Each structure stands twice: as structure tokens, then as C-alpha cells.
Length: 260
Ligand code: 2AM
Ligand code: CA
Ligand code: CA
Ligand code: CA
Image (tube, rainbow, N blue to C red; front, side, top):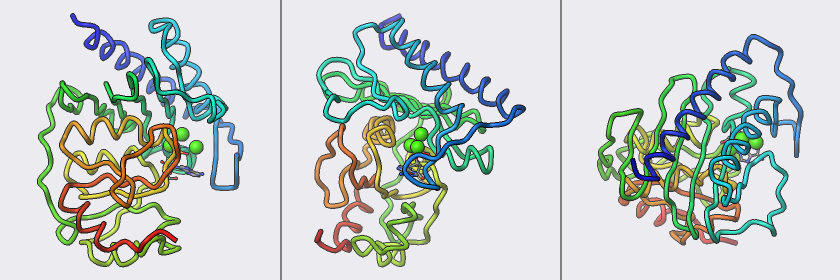
């Protein structure tokens, strides 16, 4: 077994163990705290799952740097050199709290800034999307084919709720030009829909842990992952992020208003 296959086997084991803990945890009361505001939550389960992943990564990959949403790392200490693991233990914490559904657990592995492996686990559907540049993308053990290169007009689009309601960069016109808007409250779940061709695009303001895994998987399926203006993403910065088919990306770029 090569070393990436060993990594895949370990991460899948950890994510399935985390899933068991999460589902067991639903039987107890979830402790919830607010962070920057009333819609920005963290729970005991976000912290426990992140601590579990960090402990496993440090045990099996001692040279790795870990960037996790709940670790309180300082952004100026982030780095891209060497092996960098980017973790979002529960993506869609509001859904986790309110719905006990529609959330993901995500890990992205980079080497010197180049994506090596992405893992997005749709926990309640028990679907683990994983893969990388030379491997392709799988849902559990089933290989995914690149989705059809559908344009904006003929597909559904995911738009982050604040961007839509404030018409950021003319995104309401983008929404109206599409077949319809879907907002699920989890970047990971929305990106899975683009991987599967269920949506042609997803655009939102995202932090590094929100897009680290999804970028690797989407690019492995020939999808575009850029800023809204078509620029290259900085893996360590928060940004507007567009994941789209090539045609939808061109259509969206022609409609967005210039940055002010
Ligand atoms: P999170 O649940 O891991 O925080 C919808 O809220 C999506 O945007 C989720 O994927 C969420 O990730 C992400 N997000 C990023 N920044 C956020 C913020 N400040 N408040 C709420 N959600 C945020
Ligand atoms: Ca959060
Ligand atoms: Ca997130
Ligand atoms: Ca999170």
C-alpha cells in the first residue's frame, strides 16, 4: 500500500469514528456557545471532533501543521510550506444544532500549497467524498465522473445567504439568470452538490477550512475554484469563493459587478 492509500485508510477510519461519536452525542444535550454573533456557533461536538482529528494527525503525521477552525490559531502564524492539514470538524454548525442534519466534516491535506487529498463527509447520509489530483474523486467506493459543463441558465446555484440578501456584486441578477437558488447552510454540502452536478455553482464568503477540502475535490473533477473575479485563491485567506463548472463560471463572471 502506498503512503497516500495509507493516509486515505486512516482518515476514513477517523471520520467514521467521529460520525459514531456525533450520532451518539445526539442522545445527550449539546452545549452551544456563540462566537462573533448569534448566528456564529460552536458546540462541544465541534471542539471534541477537532481535538480528536488533531490528536490523530499529530500521532500519525508528526511533521504536519494543523489549521483547524476551532483551534484559535492566529492567521499570521498560518503557513503553506510542508504538510498542512486544514480541518473543519463540523461544517454547518447551525444545521447540526437546529436540524441534526445537513452538516459535513471536512479535512484538506496540502503539501507546499498544493492540494493532495480532500475529504468531505456528509455525516447523516454516511457519504464520504474523497480524492485528489492523481486519484480522482469517490463517493465512498464509487468513482465520480466530472459533471456536465452546464451553464448558469440551465443549472441551480448555491449562494451564501448574506451575499444574496445584500445583492453583493450583483448576485441577485446572477440568481435570477440561473434555474434557481438553493441555500443549505453548509459549504461542504453545497460543494458536494456541485461535484455531483446537482448544482452548477456555489458562491459564498468562506474561510480556509470551509473550502480547503472542496477545492481539491472540485479541481480533480475539472471544476473551477476561484474568487468571484476569476482570480486564484489564497489558501490561507478568507475570501469570496466560487466553485462552478467552466461555463457557469464564465456566465457568472460576466454578470458580477466590479469590486468597489
Ligand atoms: P461553519 O458552520 O463551519 O461555521 C453557512 O453558514 C456556511 O458558511 C457554513 O459552511 C459555515 O461554516 C460557513 N461560515 C463561514 N463563516 C461563517 C460565520 N461567520 N458564521 C456562520 N457561518 C459561517
Ligand atoms: Ca463556525
Ligand atoms: Ca465551515
Ligand atoms: Ca465548522
